[in-house]
Length: 116
Image (cartoon, rainbow, N blue to C red; front, top):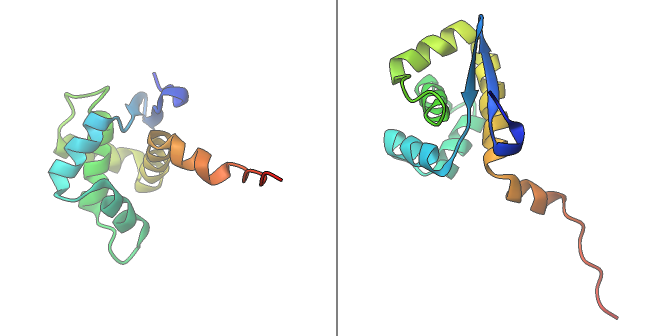
């Protein structure tokens, strides 16, 4: 079951719910699979000119590793086909955001008042 407080996001595919999360181990497997650092993968995904379906498939596969390690890369592609790319992209975005909560907290933090 997806727990957003622990970085997990649900991806509903027909009658089955999958759980995506990007733990350190999942992110390491993603980097190994794509041969790129996470920041570069995220930047490429956000640029329509460089975004690749193979990257989306690798992200879904890596995101499933913590909760569904039996799912292979090709099966991840089948999940994307069944769920639809927009639903997968939304789930990836939420799970990625949950994986890096400190960054979001820093961006939303109030600036400190100067000492007088």
